[in-house]
Image (tube, rainbow, N blue to C red; front, side, top):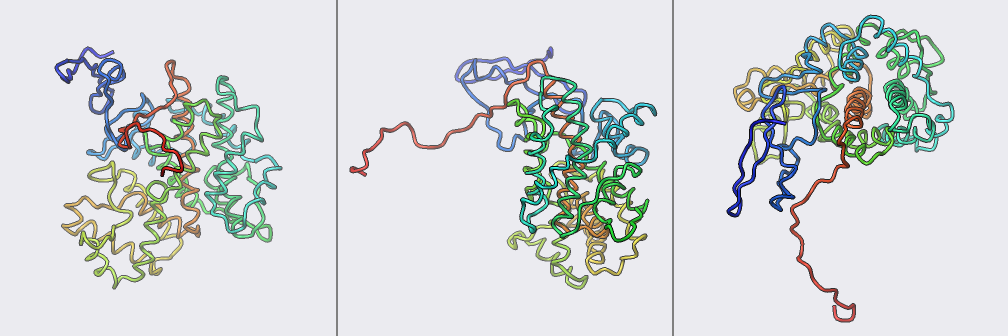
Amino acid sequence: MSDKVAKLSLNGNTYDLPVHSPTLGPDVLDIRKLYGEADVFTFDPGFTSTAACESAITFIDGDKGELLHRGYPIEQLAEKSSYLEVCYLLLYGELPTAVQLKDFTARVTNHTMVHEQMHYFFRGFRRDAHPMATMVGVVGAMAAFYHDSTDINDPWQREVAAIRMIAKLPTIAAMAYKYSVGQPFVYPKNALDYAGNFLHMCFAVPAEDYVVNPVLAKAMDRIMMLHADHEQNASTSTVRLAGSSGANPFACIAAGIACLWGPAHGGANQAALEQLREIGTVDRIPEFIKKAKDKTSGVKLMGFGHRVYKNFDPRATVMKESADEVLDLLGVHNNPTLQVAKELERIALEDDYFISKKLYPNVDFYSGIILDAMGFPTSMFTPIFAISRTVGWISQWKEMIAEKNQKIGRPRQLYVGPPKRDYIDLRHR
């Protein structure tokens, strides 16, 4: 407990509120006893000023443009690490030794296949179903196929469930994609790395060999790494809230995927690319910029700025490097959409209006460009986000389950409906 105390004066009474000092970030007022002592709640729509949990996993400083996983800056991890190494870091708290990483990688690799009966489950969906709709259903149904890892009170079962989901989500997402385009499912290959295996499952066909390009595999690995966890965002909070009820881990992750599907959350990179296509050509950019600057137009610039990062998105710098590498490799610079993206990027970084409003290109802007250049349809952007974020969700879920004083989530409300009133018989209404 903290030795600092804040005092709240209300209706002639004074209440002491303990003040906790985190490792990083602002102090936090502890209001857990406020309702019992003062008979009042706090009101915080969107929970933007409320700490709903303690966590040792990820820290964001939006003013500095800083993202730390277990204390390690995302820039260093993106330069020197890999997605599976970051998965280990998020799950277990420390970077692995060479032996630990080899063992962890082997465990994930050996769990990438899904139960064969799940193939029939896919065929129950309409062919034109959105891949995210399919993923919500299939991941939720994993509890029906893997009964031996649903007991949340068993640490080993929690561990098995975690490995299974990290391993199988790429397979499930690739199957959802293949199903949507009418192609046969492609089984995972243990000889490929995590990102390369996902690309192979998405783009290989039985009729010919498919060789994964290492530049594309590296770019996909970075996309996954840069989306692995992002503190207590909407989908992570959803996973924690679902988990607080004691729901099985597969149901919790399915809930997170459902939340991620929202265009204000996981659909941002899709929205950014669709906006670039809507602009169409470079000569139409001035007209669009004029509308974006006009508050009455209703036009918003997608893929620029960030709710949390106030000056720059640290992930965007790394993602821009990957975007340049991928575009150079594929030679698609003449693509009209990409030309629009490059010109918008230049304007946003030089125009005083965008600089003053801190509307810099964010991670969604660049990741959408990369995925489009790779050949993914926009409908697959959010499923790829879900693959990437799965380890963050699981790490947060495991941390919550291990808490000694863990309670079921139960937000309060500011009730503004009618006061108590008597029922009126139907004939008198």
